[in-house]
Length: 247
Image: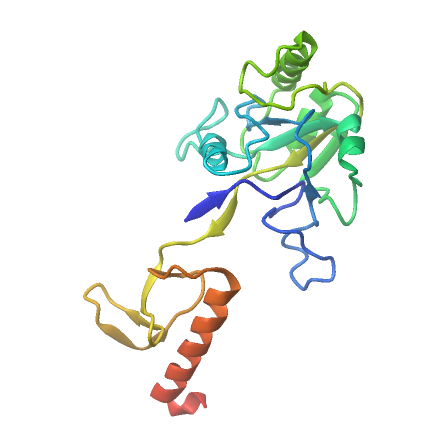
C-alpha cells in the first residue's frame, strides 16, 4: 500500500478534486483546497503539535512527510496507537494569499473548521470522527505561538526547515483543514493470473469461477483506472467462457 501527501485539504479524501456532480460526491465531501504556497500554513498532529516541514511535496521529502504524519504522537493511545488526524492551521491571510473560497463546494463542514480563537478551533477539531483523542486548546495555541515567534525572529524555520517562512498565523478567523495522508495505490492483495484475471491460491493453482480485478489485486505494476478496466474486461471474458450462464 502506497500513501502520499494529499493534493487537496479540507475534504475527506484529498487525492483529487471531485465535482459536486459526481455520483460519489458524499464520499469526498468537497473539492478541497489546493495549496500553492505553504507560507503561513502550519500542520499539526492529533495532539495539536507541529511535526513536519509542511512544504514537503516531492520525493523523497513527500515520503518523509507521510512517515511523520503516520507516526505515533502524544495523542496516540492503545490498542493501535494510531497517529490520528492531521490538520493544516491557517488564518484569514492564508485564505487570501491562496485565493481560497471557504464553504461549498470547496470545503466539507465536517473536515474544515473556523473559529475566532485557536482554543475554540481546537474544540471544533475534536468533533471530527478521526480525532479519537481530544486536542488541548492550550497546546494548539502554544504551537502557533511558537510558529509565529520563529517567523518574527526572521531566521527561518529552525524547527523543521521550511524554506518559505515569512507569514505569521495571526489574523482571525483561524481555520483547521483536514490533511491526512491518502491512499495512492495498493501494491499487494489477491493473487491473480494476469493472463486470465483468475484468482490463484497459495500454491499458484487457479481457483475455479473466481476472478478479481482492480486495486484489490496484487503483483501487477499497473494501477488506477487502467488496472481496473483492463483486468475487469479480462475477468469478464474468462468468467463468461467458464460459465455460459453469465453470457
